[in-house]
Image (cartoon, rainbow, N blue to C red; front, side, top):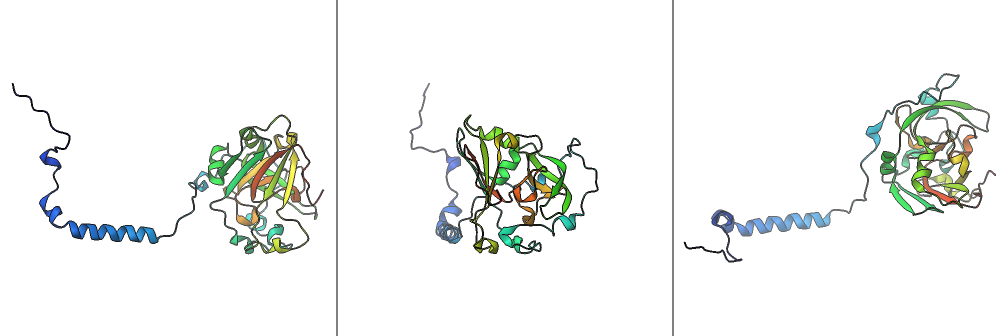
Length: 255
């Protein structure tokens, strides 16, 4: 019996390039070069995680109820404070300039390992639910809001703070090109506030990512804001970019 072994450089006939393609190779190479040049001319796109918007509405946690009607959505999304965009209440239009996608979140300080994560990725990792909370302002007005989001304790658990950590400091963004209020001299931006670690792990402490069954609007603190119903609204840090665990009390402007 004759046994023939193929040499490494030999190819079967079925893998040979068709004659018509070979004869037109110059046209093919020219077209490929054009595609490559076009791709090189395209701008580099910033990384953005898959949107979390499809997650809403989320299930309501019936353990959190109110003794009053829910505030009209139009009122809650148009009458609010966000000093980064001005000290008046009509900031909803200006707040639309805020670029929230992508939105990088940093979790650092006295933790086992620093974490940098896109807001959409963070939201997808968290146990989302809807809660009815009363929102109170030191200016003597209040609202009843259906917040969507996750218990702040879930973020604390993910961060794995060291035993020596006593406080959670939260920090908002800085971008004077879109947030005209941050050009004001009266506050040392970025806006900072915090909670004792035991407060951050309280069942009521909540990170809101949505409201009224939809992603949270920019003027209400998208994509992540603190909601702690036992404290006045100025403690509710909006558009959070950093969660910092520390053993020092956060130096808030209002404290």
